[in-house]
Image 1 (tube, rainbow, N blue to C red):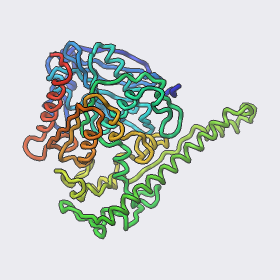
Image 2: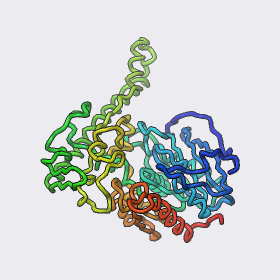
Image 3: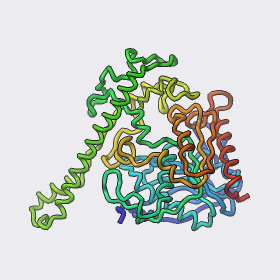
Image 4: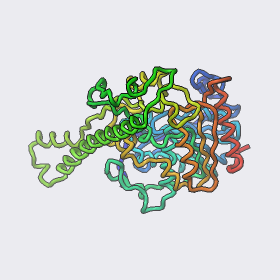
Length: 441
């Protein structure tokens, strides 16, 4: 049976009318814009769900009337309960579920295999609420998560995954994974692991020392082709080949440490099941229990070092030289937060290891037979064009659409009204939905 993870109080379907919505919830604030108000008559329903493995997740269901089609937003750790597209989709006649997974706000122990149970609970809840169609909209890290779920849901037992990436029992064949009816990938990563591998700084010499640096592998060294922004860097093919190989070597090094940690815990868990364990002195029992339970936290420094950040000839698009979380890519790489910095061994292998994660949108979408819309933001500094294009070309369905929108990773435009890309994205999605899925109005 799947492992039991978490225990919390469960509540279903309590809500309030739009007139009862507090002022802070009536307008969606997105990075300085307060223009996105919920349409009149919107009802917000707070949802608490329990997965089959016992873990709990939550979210907000937004609806204006009869339930026909609902759009579901999820992310492994980010709070998508108030996604910036929600007001637009409601106005177009669709309901929205903004999800919050069991790992909300902290993915230190995030295992994507377990997240399948959370998404399954959402789909079951929405079907029970009377929705005819459920469409996932996977934004950023939610793209590979939603695609991974749909691939597993579309795989009939007994051919689903039976363990986590760490090798622990977690049999998805024993879970009820109801299928969704469509998939929208919105600036989705290939996987969080692939994103981390592309950005993993291979110049780190010692994992415990954030200042350790091998100069010959430093992408921010002028000797290797780096130029101070806004000047564009230019790295040689030879440097890039050494750099990418060294990134894999560093990832392998972290993976080995993670697997050693898991093997140690597994060894002492097995000792706890031996017939003579209960007869051991209590102090000895305590030592074994602690070695079976304790986790060394993996600290992963400098995880925003993709040469494509500063060399715009790599996977060219309309991006500028800017870090996703800091204006300067070098500052972003050497400071906190990066993509990942503290993880359990199990969470690292499942989520952020580019070599061990089972999540890969280009592979998972080969099992998605439902309609697929893949949206690429042309100025995205993080999700480069080949990722979205690969979703389109690899999708199993014949009903697949590729859309390109002038905007950065958050749909913001560099010229004109900054938020115009959000409205354009919403229109693109609404038009695609209306030709395939019934709206409530």
